[in-house]
Image 1 (spheres, rainbow, N blue to C red):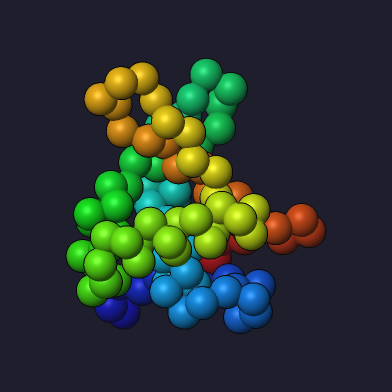
Image 2 (cartoon, one colour; image 1 turned 135 degrees about the horizontal axis):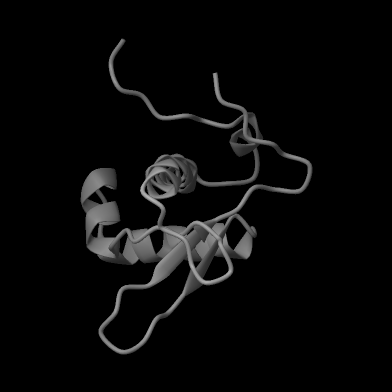
Length: 104
């Protein structure tokens, strides 16, 4: 089986296609962060995923990648926290109310 991205059913509504794909990418990265123990002081899993990398994967501009992250944040699907000067932003991937993650 080739590598694949998990695509939650709740993504089928209310988002642009780029936002849906980006959320699936971020969710995949969050699973890696969880396996690697990337948690903040409150125990929440975070990811570091530069905007440049998101833009490259999507085949879009940096402005589009920034807009997609803003769209996901406005929908409550991610939270971005700026760290100290020159440190990368932490991205927290959220699930909508009532959604659960199940692993095969």
